[in-house]
Amino acid sequence: MASLTLELPVVEQQQKQQQPAAAVEPAPSASGSSTLADVGAATASSAILGTYKRAPVTFVRGEGVELFDAEGRSYLDFTSGIAVNSFGHADPGVQGAIRDALESGLLHISNLYANEPAERLARFLVDHAPFASKAFFCNSGAEANEAAFKFARRWARALPGATTAKHEIVALRGAFHGRTLGVLAATDRPAYRVPFRPLAGGVSIAERDLEQLAVSLSAETTAAVIVEPVQGEGGVRVLDAGWLRELRALTREKQVALVFDEIQCGLGRTGHFFAFEGAGVEPDVVTLAKPLAGGLPMGAVLVSDAIAAAVQPGDHGTTFGGGPFVASVALHVVERLADPALLESVRENGEWLGEALAGAAARTGKVRAVRGVGYMWGLDTTDPAGEVVARALDAGLLVCSAGQHTVRLLPPLTMTRAQLSLGLGLLEEALG
Image 1 (cartoon, rainbow, N blue to C red):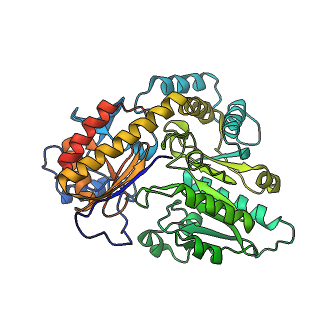
Image 2 (image 1 turned 135 degrees about the vertical axis):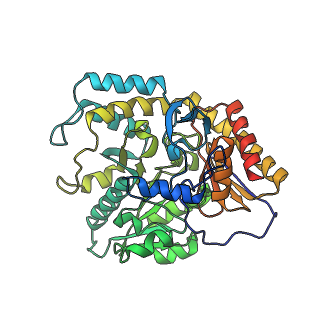
Image 3 (image 1 turned 90 degrees about the vertical axis):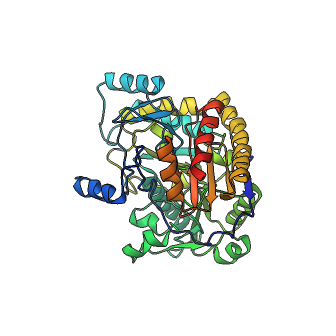
């Protein structure tokens, strides 16, 4: 997995622990007339619970790699709905798959009955993941990680000689695995965690250090380690492939399940269908979501034969997961995301994008570091990320943050080099 990590000695390094930021910070409108008070007033008047600081723009239409607001202004989308819209907006193929799925008349039948689209989707995914034999479907990334924790514990306690003490889940420093109560314990964001303590027990966060992990992972008490091959919310940090291989060896030695959270970095974003392919490591469990169903809510857990054998009827469930409508659309999406030509394009354009971002960083003097792979990049900025996001919005570019001083780029996988170049020009303008 070819990646770039470029540290630029522009200013002193950012604090080790970044503070959380909203996906898109409040920003001035295109006219520059909106204020934070305006944004606050708009939030207060909305009937939607205020769990997000939404930008002062309302999108009414999308086409290709652009979104359009109520005034008709276009915005180049380098966010993709936070790594969801891999084919951009109003994609004819996705729209056709939705129409075809509707024609069957089957939107939902529950998991009391089998449905063919889910069976075909599961077969496609496990056939493309050499380690996997079964798939479980749900509705989101957080749900997928919650299920992965349960499946790993079920497997660990079924090992010969194991006891109920073998239940601990270990995550890594900088991790983000969701905000539901169970996976929140594995998410390394103090501001997300503190208001909701006590968190779920038996889950801890360890440093990204193999020597420490060798001590802390226990064959008697540890059930699983969960890892993002590319940490997204944690600042777009690409974990070294050699490091991941050593972690794989360590987990095998201690009979600990290795879970790869590929919710943001999987399904083509690194230039490989699965991120683990680029690292040359086969985990025991992979969790997926975001782009899986082209913008419809869906998550998945792929598990090895050993873990699948430990899971029994009644151990877990879902009302909506893997329904025929969403599974039909997801099958269309993954078949296209697995296209070798698309993946090659992401790899090649991703290498070009990394070099171009390094050039922009050097020219502006406003970037401390550039990190990323494929179509997933982070820039550590001297200005607060929220300010850069706001200026980019004003310039007609949509980007998001990944911490207080990291700007994150997640363009659609179909974005051309010319469109990427246009966006980089707007980003350089926003950097100042």
